[in-house]
Image 1 (cartoon, rainbow, N blue to C red):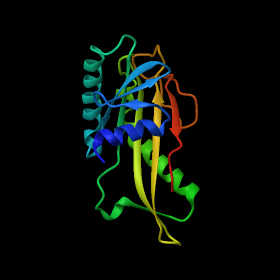
Image 2 (image 1 turned 30 degrees about the horizontal axis):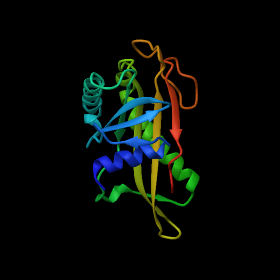
Image 3 (image 1 turned 180 degrees about the vertical axis):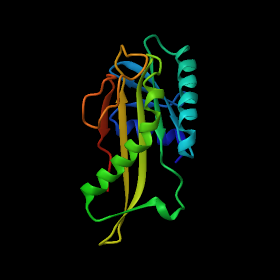
Image 4 (image 1 turned 60 degrees about the vertical axis):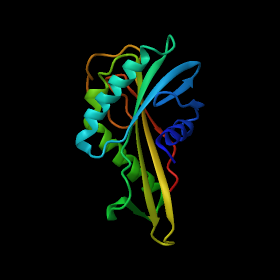
Length: 183
């Protein structure tokens, strides 16, 4: 599957009809949303990839339809081939919680950067896909998790405080974990 096809599938997993243009354009409630997807190869390059995506979205929005908005997706999924790429599990709920916690851990260091994105960028999404091995059966499964942050239409210039998972945050950012784990 090519990157554009993966992007269409990714957008489709959150229930939106998608067409590929730039990186990806989804229409949400009649509003075009230009989605720029990045897959950093290390944790150290995530801020740079977010900034690249920001520049690309803002440039594309200049020629987009009136009222169009932007979104950024970062996938922490790495190419397979390493021994630590497999999640060993017995309990499905515990495996989901572990994948979710890892995704939150990976996204957290960049929070200050993306909560200061321009108002035309309305969502920040993080993705993680893992290959899991069920201990008892030896079955291989694929697990995916999306962490979607939607930005308020009027947001502060900087976050007002950390946001605990599942609690109200001071920066107005809404957090939604998309149900996509299939382990």
